[in-house]
Amino acid sequence: MVQGACPVGWHLPNKAEWTELIEFIAGDGFSGLECTALKAKNGWQNDGNGLDVYSFSAIPAGGRYSGINAFDGIGLSNRFWTATASSDTTAWYLTLGYP
Image 1: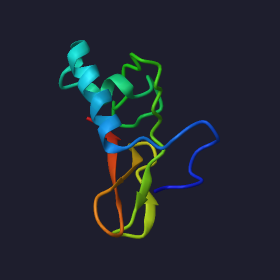
Image 2: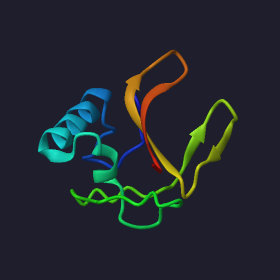
Image 3: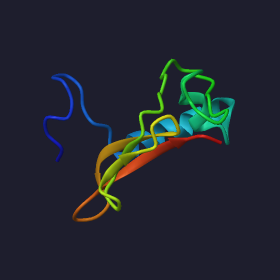
């Protein structure tokens, strides 16, 4: 269980909650454009801006990539970690990227 990642009254979503969100967006007319619907309208490089349909306003803050032990992708992607483990050493995550 992840602790201390969120302010009091908030929680780190699990994989099932992300899946529910993506399925909702697909069913709301954005099938195939689920991530684009969540991305901010500006700030993404390479024409990767989103539609920000739900005011989620995901920005391209990059992410930490354990394989290279560094932060990368600023301007190009965003990685959202979840509370669901995918192995003994990492968690499931969702990545929003440019087209």
